[in-house]
Image (cartoon, rainbow over all chains, first blue to last red; front, top):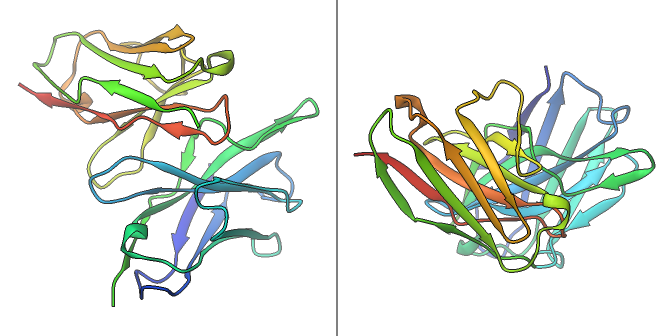
Length: 127
Length: 108
């Protein structure tokens, strides 16, 4: 069974960089034909797609966050990570890692429906 | 990006009743790439429906999805106590994937 688990600081100061890691178990991110990514949800609000990565390093970022987001993968640790720079209070949210897409028949879909989610981790931006 | 508008914002029903939730897109959703999720407090969303009408693994058949183009519907035929939650639609036919603002289904 595929399991995803987020980890990282729960509190980040304004203007600093938010960093989170997702550890995947039950499958190898380098052997499966999947995209892995991040979605966030501000308290009491809806969901926002942040971005996705394929094990080869190919990435897709939401244009609304693209200038501040970096997603990377460490296949040796079966992990992928999120970095969001210059954070403000508006970046306070529960951050979910997830299986976000797939490649099949020569086509790749970096944004797809999400059938596997991590439990989520709350990150608060405050001084 | 495609904006999804869900209605109603809140739906108050009793167990055993039928629930009908709507999701309208600002432009046509490519290939009916529309999904529905259920989210309970403190939990990650759970995939219910993908491809507008295909049930995800393990989802009871009282959940059904329909629609195409810009108008989509999630129907719960007979509400069980565990069904009350917030429901989100998502389109993934056009990048970036986007979500609706949610419909809260509450016990009347």
